[in-house]
Picture 1: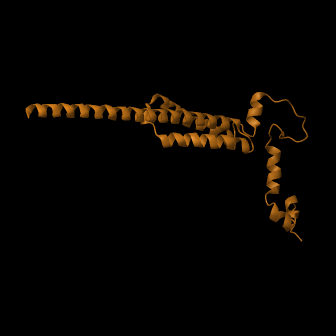
Picture 2: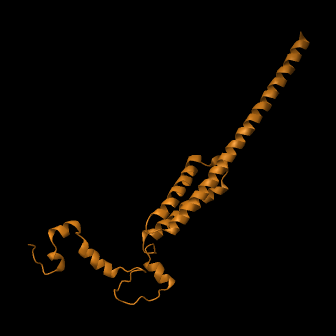
Picture 3: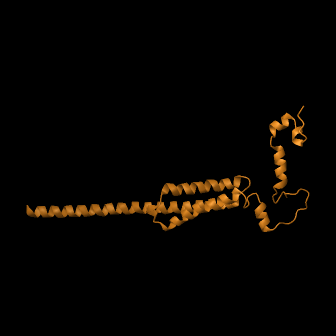
Length: 175
């Protein structure tokens, strides 16, 4: 027999309390926390909401981390995009490959989680694009350097051979 406190939650059996200890608190907060789909006042007719009211009461609205995390992540995208002005030899391949990988992984994840967060998906896709552009710049630069290095080595080899032939002719002339 349960103790009687005069409140509804005090009359629950031990089994109900063991599985749902916060049920009473959830029922109270559910009344006060409304969303666009579930108005705060039960039984009230659904009134059309303005755009700003929908943004304010949305699951990914301005009051949630689902809004502010992508807003802050735009700083990472802008920092990566500001590196477009830097020469390719000063960029890090591993850093930009990491930006590209995290952008692609988290873009996919944004479509799997609930609530779907399109703002987060957009910022991660832009992060993937920035990483891809930078990685392609770095690889293009490195491949052009390899080509110019082989050409430089061939021209140095030719100069050395020519100077050696010149020295050989001078030595033969003296003998």
